[in-house]
Length: 181
Image 1 (tube, helix red, strand yellow):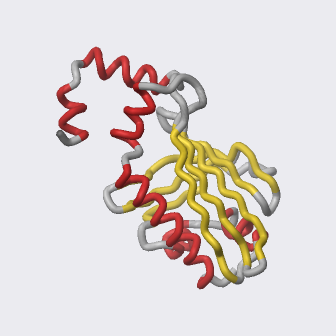
Image 2 (spheres, helix red, strand yellow):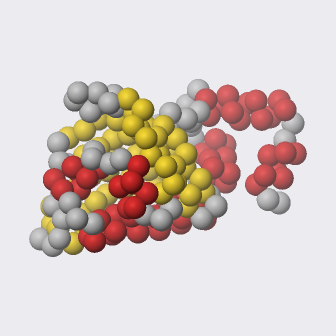
């Protein structure tokens, strides 16, 4: 049975319970980690690129990038809000992201403004050939598991969506090797 058919066949009460669990963060997290080696670019260059984005740079960076906007810019970057729109195969990523933590030239943590917790952590580690980027997507919180974890993995971050996300992360960060910074 397809995911959308399953959801349509749930009773309104069941849907309410599932989405209430999700909304109140009563589930453990699902994590998708992708490591990408970027040749010839330093962590500082990649960090500065990330915070120097505009719509033209963003849409040029990868063909699946559709739109980018700065919604709110703070002086120290934490609290800044950006809008990203990407179309990864059948997975549409179209959220506002708030920067919740940074470590200069080393780490960026952003939280999606979405009905379930989604946190993207990017770390930049220097290696002899350039930079190792770790792209860590965390969906959920670290509380009770069971049925809501199953629900997330079955209907929200399915294997095909995980594969699309990982492929995209590798492609977009490898593209930085060819971009002048």
